[in-house]
Length: 337
Image (cartoon, rainbow, N blue to C red; front, top):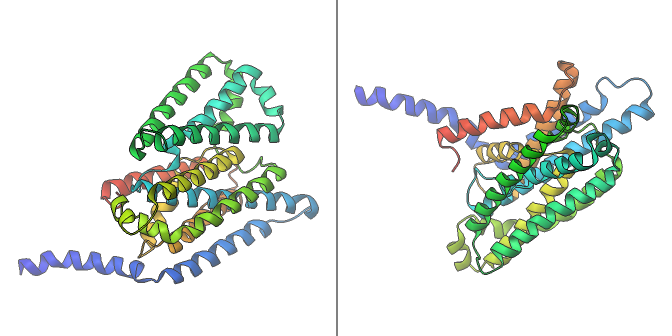
């Protein structure tokens, strides 16, 4: 009798999880794709009034930025977690987000926050992308391709540099005028309301150009997910593949961060949900699921904030807060390792 009562909760839990796991990945792709397309259409058309020639291009610009960030962050996070063999890590651990904040802080400290905002968007974009990609390349060249040749050492040094960048930023911010710091603070959160159309086009070309080799690597990434020794034993050129993936991740994160701002927990949120929904870990499935979840989260979240709550605030704050809570819940339950 005791054995029956103890087995009942387990059976209930398994039966409760079975419907989610039993849904084929192709069905998830269709459901998520239709949902994402519907949300994009709703974002463009709901509440559309006034001068359409003025309103519609701006909505297209914003929804384009959200889709682009969803692609860049989703792809880079899944690829980074595969090569590191850890699904609680994101490319931000390399210190790119902290470097972005340091660049903004130094420019505001030297030029003034008002001058920083009036500085040409293409100039700032080119400077930020160049510094972040250059920093990543120096780390890879020094620690992964050099004599050290260790991915773990690369991650550790990236964490140390991230702490250093945050400390330097904090020091400069304490020396700044409070009014300038308030202006600067708005740049520390991702925003889709101030995206330059020219930069969006340049970023779209870069992201699409990087997603092509990332998609062609999907089968090698499936093997790489088995671990370094297994991948080498099965004929994968481990160092070349990992280096290529790290370069793709760095450029995607640099372009996304320079375009809208840092999004620390967003990638972790969509990748964790993608692995929970997929009953398999093939990158041909996980990558598009993560991207579609990102589109749904960004476009749907912005639509709800604007049309339902009439609450004009930075969507990234809500997503970072939700992503942090989901991360802690999944970590405490042992769902991600």
